[in-house]
Length: 396
Ligand code: SF4
Ligand code: SF4
Image 1: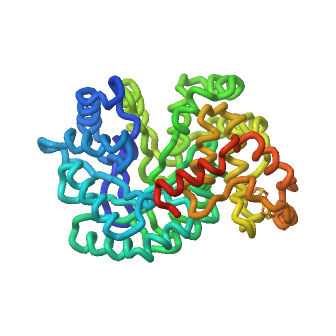
Image 2 (image 1 turned 45 degrees about the vertical axis):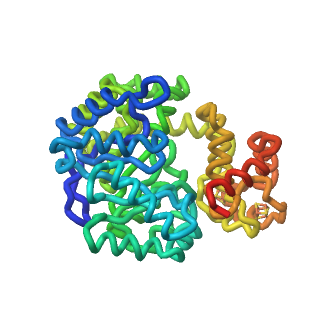
């Protein structure tokens, strides 16, 4: 297992991190025996970064990880877990959640404590206004948490604002060869690196879509290489080739995935891909881009929309529907653009003022496209459901 030093604190972190959100299941719950066996096997093979969250597996992921780490394993690993801002309307609420997490994890300190799923700077501001950041700093001074970070799902502009708004110890972003220009983007990764903030990658395979939903032409490109590799290996190698990345999380669900990932992580050095391999990626990306409905590069020149539409976010969600044939696409659209953002940012908020179109270098007819997206992605009662969910999750 290759280890990489965290540039902020010197922690030697395994480049492969274990994401505890897709643990093996049995019936409706986690297969506890199998999961504990896998976690310990991973540790014995050098994995030392374990990522979980208050919500994963309906709260059971943290307790399972806590169970797996008793008997001397805790000291060998770094635990990352997350505080869900969307559930917090008072400081006391945050403290209560943290106490639950510490109890579930059966530990008295958390190595990396992240604000979960920040989507915009306004959510960070709300946390700061509630006193959450001061409280986290106090926990850090007392060594109850060791590092403060955030995980991010939003657009490039929001990422740039959030990462510069606080002296973060770590950040976690969605990134893979398909998302080079999506969410935080490659320039966001480079900005984090420039600021000296370590980066943890989530969704390296887009929830398995870069394995199971790849167009046949893309698979053929990969197969043209003399050495046989799975699409998962290609995707992981693309990430580990980039020196700006510290840890790549993989949500492993069985021993075969674990074994394959450990094998790849033992030889995937930064800057190790050859010109030929990089060329293959360019061809694969070109194939994927050809299948992209709206040629938005997420440059952000059209933003901000005076009415709050997240234009690149709407386009990215819509493109995914066609590119990867995602089944839960409408839910994903509702979640990222309606429920988790500080204010709703979905397509039908557009008032057709036209301001955004003047600045789009791709000459996208934004108003027209947003109308199409509204029709396809916003089912009847969409707004009512968004309202109810926002209220239930205390965002209002
Ligand atoms: S046309 Fe729509 S999306 Fe564009 S700036 Fe105006 S309201 Fe916002
Ligand atoms: S300006 Fe055009 S390409 Fe850039 S984010 Fe907006 S819609 Fe996308």
